[in-house]
Length: 244
Image (tube, rainbow, N blue to C red; front, top):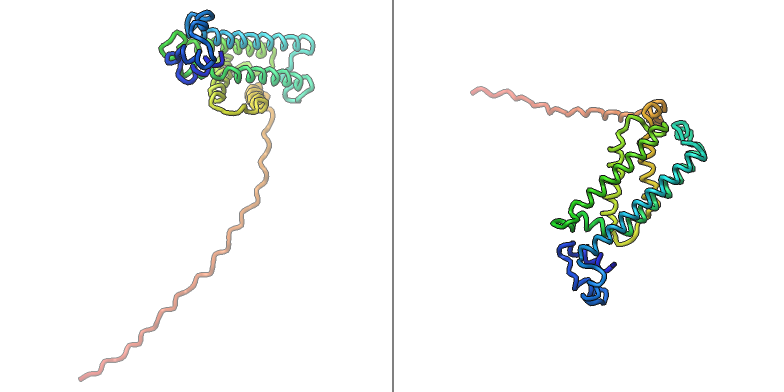
């Protein structure tokens, strides 16, 4: 499976050849066809694993949040402003699930790259955008749940918020595919969380919290102008002309 994924990244789905895949993993073409009728079927199974993993992550995420809401209540806007203990526990849950999602995307970063750049002219050409639409709707639904609870700004468009989140993960997966070493995904998850939490605070609470005043600046002292130097004008002596 890993040999096939590497070949798909290198040549794209249409350009990948079964003989190259089997040669890379030491199998015959006959052994390949015992498991998969075509290379497209093999790639479809890889994509299916990626999708099912995302669905499982999302289901566990919302189940965890619902349990949190039932046992500890929904963190309100005041919790966010006061940075209460309940709100901090909620953020820890969010960060752990964001990190789990980033870890999963890292494992399948090559699949996202093939769907983006290597699936043109195949049955998978529009699959990425169908998956994207499903994820946007899921995040929008979860966001509406938080809007109803008063945790986030009720005037924000849930689909726009979902599109930003899904688009960020899509771009991050493409960036991951070009990295030779695994990045600090914990720092990535922390950054995403700070952006989401800071940008979704209800507007009336943002306006009620005055921004910190900038530090006082020392008045600039202008340099004293240099004294103007007067140029000496040479005096011209006029000598009377002699008359003949």
